[in-house]
Length: 323
Image (cartoon, rainbow, N blue to C red; front, side, top):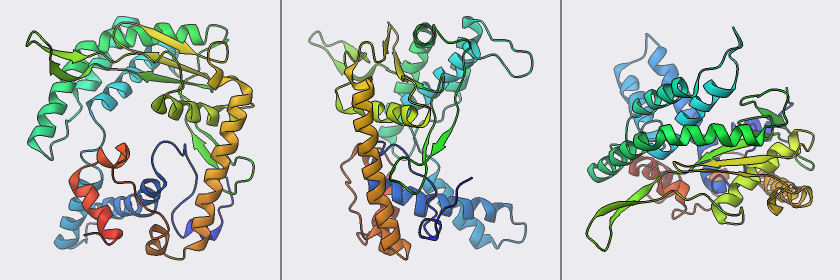
């Protein structure tokens, strides 16, 4: 339990997360507007005395802010973790795990249930095609992910699945929230073939979802920041990152990656704390949601905005006075 100050409560902002998982404006928009709006919408749908106009508005809110989130690749990543959990983590009732083949089957079934984005015909067609490609690859990705995780946790007494870590970093008032996938300190990342194109022979082919050779790239550094959260909140146990695709896996830890050494991670944790402190100062300075969003500027070209539906973007731009 945390004593959350009023300047955070008034904005429905109760904890921080990896600052590199989206620009600050997007994070604030999600926490101070989207989540409260969705809660109100779902509460309205449960209200047997709600007026039909309120019910219609609630359904529209849910369509704008909840539907068409994510992508086939993101759904595939979640499905792979479903499979690796079943194969590695003993269930709570009998302490049993599934065979690799059983886990692969359930992972594929879970991915099949994914509903592609449908706000645009081209987007829907592309996401459906990507879904089919992910379904082709998922058995191999689950297998490689299992092998990689076993290697990463070879010295562990037992396999531990996803947990929540929630604690304030030095210099911050609000807690940092993070969810290591495995061993209280590690995360699984999946790579998928994508962006189909025609090669020189005129044949339609797919770009391979390559495994990174280092963690110095922009997207992989995002994962380092995530791992730094594990490190900071879990007694500085050495974190690991496992990447898996349809052909192989790769394990990164402090023995083969300078970005996961204690000195580097300590610097990252300090940077995360500074970024959280800036957010806390913004929360303190603003009395209302409108004032708060007026203190940040959205980067509409950032991936985390551009991957959102047009309806979601329109609602955001309305709050920033751009619609």
